[in-house]
Image (cartoon, rainbow, N blue to C red):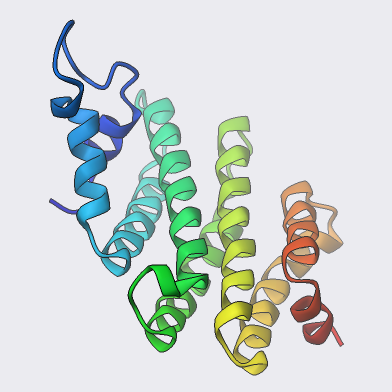
Length: 194
């Protein structure tokens, strides 16, 4: 089993999915957590990104499952951000810097498109967009820790170019992402902006 909506639902279940008095190690949530941790970090990040993209495209038309999809998107984004941070400090992941860098740079454009294409103005959508922005900020930081300054500047430039129109139009989530970039990767931001 890869990263699926069922896996995310099990992770989101408030009771862990157990009936009263069940063994906490055998609840659907515990099994889902174990499964998620058993995936390699490259498979996990690819699966989480894919779920984020899939859930985003399925939430473009209103339906009764919007709140469930919003919760799934939020969880996928939070878990993805955690894995992006782990890739930046790749010694603990067991993969080399070149592989970690490749995984991170492959995520830039899909995450940026997800951030930019989210035209839904609902509060839930704004919160999810904010979490995707956190992923992008973490991605820029992680690239700056792994790569040559040129690669991290290219990633930062791509993000800045993408959010530039939103910042010019005073879009709050674009401005918050710019602030996150300034806080998390100030040197790369400075080098990329001039």
